[in-house]
Length: 112
Length: 109
Image (tube, rainbow over all chains, first blue to last red; front, side, top):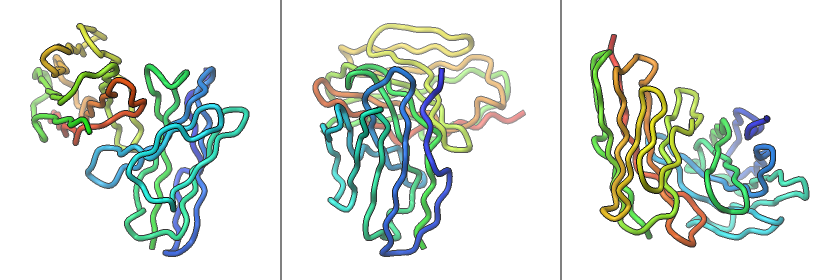
């Protein structure tokens, strides 16, 4: 039973660039949520995708966007990167927007 | 929005000791999860416990939903228990987890 997977593991980008992070949910799950975790903080909710649509959004600017594909995998895109976007980005999956969320290993993004 | 407070922020213990971590939340929830974050950043599920008591080996958890708090107990601590423990809650209808700031547990040999 495959768990949640994310790619890449690490990424270094320059201010102003754009980045795409990828997530495959746990087998049998159809809902993907993205979280940002700054150093020393708890994860913060970015948004949730279900049935290929954004269903919930946290307090993040429009520079953060996403997509969900028919196979339930998801992408997180961040445009015009800022130094403050440096963080661990976590993807979680669940079933039908409810119940237990399972997290992937994360992508560590460094913006220089 | 819902507030989640964890205490203590830091806890340093000797191997073999017992510990209790607390999570207070400010509104009714339909989901409460405890996680252990390993040194590489992965959040490991410990318990899904919106109410009641559960046990898994040396770990147990209790959530008293009516009083809006949850406790995580770790008995006979081992050095591998070190790390950051997070409580996260989901308010009814919100479909997003709100995390506390975590408790950093250090178990010394």
